[in-house]
Image (cartoon, rainbow, N blue to C red):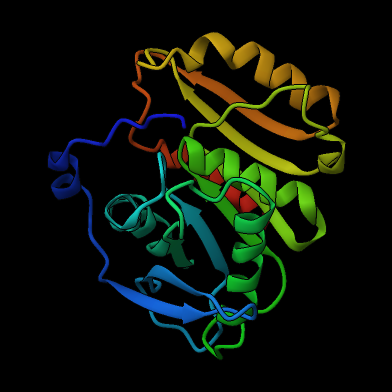
Length: 224
């Protein structure tokens, strides 16, 4: 299991917070999934586009709650309906079974009249970023793109289903887990598969970093 570095709680108070709520949602397979949701900051008559955002490490309730607050709130301020699922087995959302639960979650959420149908944005931090890439590889036609902040990829995995698929990737240059050393390999694996990749190293940034929203906003405008 890949470790995660928890963003210092101080940063939670430096970011604007949008009210979030925890729900338990019954999926089509009969299982129940915990989810933290963050509604768009501004009300609108139009349904909001859906973002599935996955936290790092094991994706447990504590990590998912914090992720919904500091990163989920940023997306909500930009009009997204944010859902941060809690891993049912402390294995993030890696592997076919947990990937499938996210797909079921999307189906349930899009039954709500305030959430838009159609393609969904995937995003994730660390293990969550790699979960997002796994899920996208299954059915890329269902997703707008993946914002992986950070994530790793390798040519051992078949990334060809993501040909032409938008991926926003950022890795901290001072990543405590050494992920910056794997940046070139990750970029090569995705580029060779034909991914529409926007990737960069963030100078002096740690494993978990504050978003450069100017850069991310430009990418979000492009994929929407």
